[in-house]
Length: 110
Image 1 (cartoon, rainbow, N blue to C red):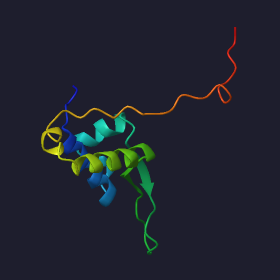
Image 2 (image 1 turned 60 degrees about the vertical axis):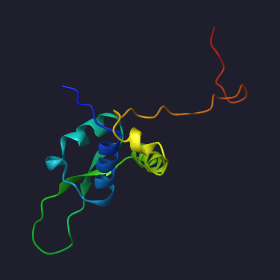
Image 3 (image 1 turned 45 degrees about the horizontal axis):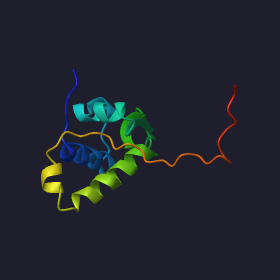
């Protein structure tokens, strides 16, 4: 089942992953959506350096793409359009990469 999340909900979830150590095993449903979008991943957290056994745990962390997306959404949050945009369904921003120039483009095979 596909859930539709608002821009505001996605921004809040990205901030939660950025500022808190959210256990991957106890992640909210929106984290699975962000994982599918390539914005979050699970990372093994190092065990503390205290005596005794401490089981390793996986936490949710932002990917490079997730960090770029939180920056983009935070810039949008500062705009006057955010009042209406925050309630809209979230759609991952299309990457605006420049096309490779003829000099750097790989040769075309015939």
